[in-house]
Image: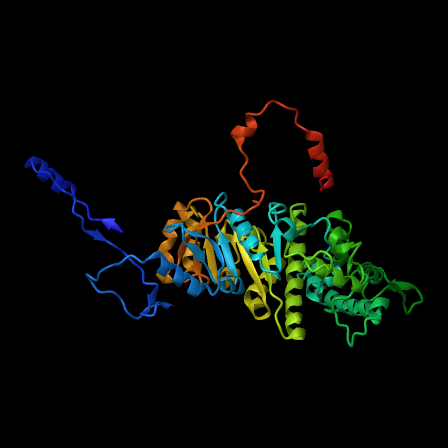
Length: 492
């Protein structure tokens, strides 16, 4: 909306003539039709009737606005107040927000962590909510109180034997090698035998064990088999020992798993101490889903901050894939969905199209493309939307956009939106901290919202340089910091 203005030439002429110019009151209002309010008060998105020139414009009463938002929300779930009507709850359709995937986007300092904590605190009010939050910076450990189970990645184990054959082959074999076909075939053969011949698996009563069946097997034994084949000597026709048919074929293959097995950072995957039997799979999934009998939790926070960058991708990939498979088989077995919501913090780091580690992105993309059918949903949280997987963002039905000042990121988000609402991206840079615009299936129209502050808040506040630098001088405990750095853990 803008007022009609008087040109500079008109002002000069008026001044020369000694006249006083009064600003005209004529105004222009640019509107975007979003829906129709029928005579019975029912709101419907879209319209077949457009106003003509000189049609009167009327302000909508707060009660009507509340009725419209309530009817669309199909419930009483609100994440804050309307910025222009602070008394009006911003009611949204939670099923559409979660079920059709969502993205929380905004630059650093825009209030993403506060927004996520506020939304999850409200969702955890549901008696049977199941939320898994991937926390990359350890911000959310105090945000959910008794409703959450905080699992440090140094304590959780996602053992190698839960990997499917494709994931294991990606770990073991370099597909670019000329001997890759032989390595691939032999590995599948040894993997099948290792799973079938393990004593515990024989007692599980499974009709059939395949290379993808999630049962325990001894990876060290498979590696030793490869080592034997790689150095095998056989009796030749001349009576002397000669190299076996596969001698030297697996030398490079052995280097890859051995480097990880010798790396202590990978112990949570390759050297499990708690989940090292097929029977322990039940306990593992109960822990990840917050379903432990004596300790039922609605939010499970996987604190990935202690995990080194190159290990993090493997852990995230395996977690996402296992959660998808659980949802798939629950739907098949029970004939009903067990809703699981995954919130992926700082998703642009590990769900990027440009990432060299494709496994986490591929697992997340599968959830984005197929998860809705089985009741598992994904909400990605990112400060750099243009670095995110385009496949994942294209599957998101709702976008909760906080302040975005970068013009490239604004342009990327604009291209994700329908033509009718793209103009609203011009407001992204003017949003206050903790203020967002919700666009998509979960809200009847693009809506500017002041997010309710979470209580308690996540540990995401900026460092106060003036306050900390203004304190009394004290010695810096360098030794303790370096010790934790070297040991890759904090001693309580």
